[in-house]
Image (tube, rainbow, N blue to C red; front, side, top):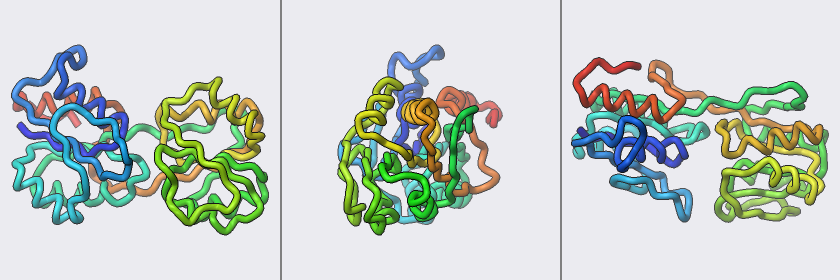
Length: 260
């Protein structure tokens, strides 16, 4: 059985480990299973998952459907980033065209807690429009792409944290911090203090790896601009944990009815 994981996330890598690595979880590795993880190639030095690996796009939904057929894929798991707005729709169309069962592995979004001062935005452009009324020293954690939305803001100073060097155009007054999570609460507290941050901007990526910044901002009483997730296709079963996705694969390999 051949499983294609559309990856690039911690959850995708963990699923590949559960299915292809040895040892891999309480149920052990899955015998007779071919696992391929596909990465978009946007990160210069990605953490390589076990199993087979391909890098690059497919050429839209039609290209993905053709790849599924050509490589005899039996199951498709969309474990891409919550802000990968296009690929979930391509995956849904391709799976339907190629008649391959599809599961979405998507981490839950963050929830507003007591004491949080959140300002929701529907896009990076909306987030940028909110900043002049909120503060002057901005901690921007929305990734290396999309900084063009903030490039016209000449007055605020930005601390931009990214895995890779951000793409131009960028805000005129900024410092780049190249780093990769998970991050600690103590580290985030110190970062906010050292750079005198008064506003945090983040996407609702969810997960524990980058959540400490929200706790640190809450403790400091800082406003947080949270960019909402893009829409996803309906009718696709969704799980939140890699272990649930691994169970889905194991049930399919055993010839049993898919649990989701």
